[in-house]
Amino acid sequence: MLFKNKVVLVTGGSSGLGFAIAEAFASQGADLIITGRRQPQLDEAVSRLGGNVTAVCADISSPAELAELFSHISAVHGRIDVLIANAGMGEIEPLGAITEAGFDRAFATNVKGTTFTVQGALSLMGEGGSVVIIGSTASINPGPGLSVYGATKAALRALVRSWILDIRGSGVRINLLSPGPVNTESLRNVLGENAQQVINALSEKSTLGRIGEAHEIGQTALFLASDASSYINGTELFADGGASQV
Image 1 (tube, helix red, strand yellow):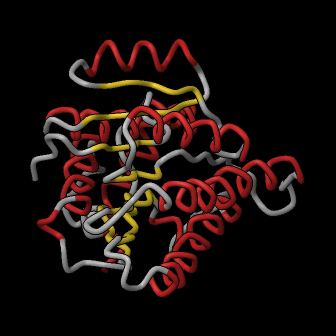
Image 2 (cartoon, one colour):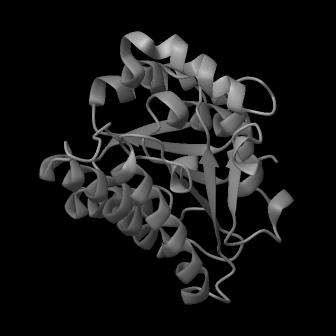
Image 3 (cartoon, helix red, strand yellow):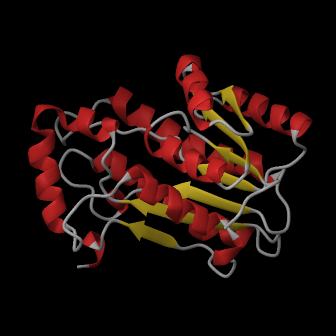
């Protein structure tokens, strides 16, 4: 699973799972591009990652910013070998408290943004290219307050089923990587003051007795993007310690 001289784009790569995934590819020699919405975070991420890494400030919910991103990659690299469509967001809004603004934010980023990220990247990809979309086990088990977030991740599953037919014969693979709960700062921020109590409860659901670590998702992304998974296409791989299987 070496990526030396491979051009790899990781959206939302400046923090959390995205950073861990970017770190995995950087460690394997990739020519890495990361995106995010905040330049200071991107600058810090580039400094921490080292190696051949560049950052482009871009919001995937903006088609104009995506167009600038792909124009830059085309001019500098001429191609994309691997796309990790990781950028996304979620908010806890239970039924009765769902807001139009929250609904629109989730679908604009997670569904529209991912759609046009993949579509834009495909024009720069060729035989052997790999797209890995970061989903979530919320696609099948969203839990309370996460109905809208879960719906956006379920939408990605439906999109991938169609997309692999649309690009049949292109030599490009598209797969979903759907993590369960992962021990990141963003998870703890969402859970608030009850974070550890909730994490303990989530750990009990896992057949491994714990939630995931970010580097484990990074390693799984490496596998799905690499030639080691060359016969895997259109699948949703759950990385959740077995919780979704029992």
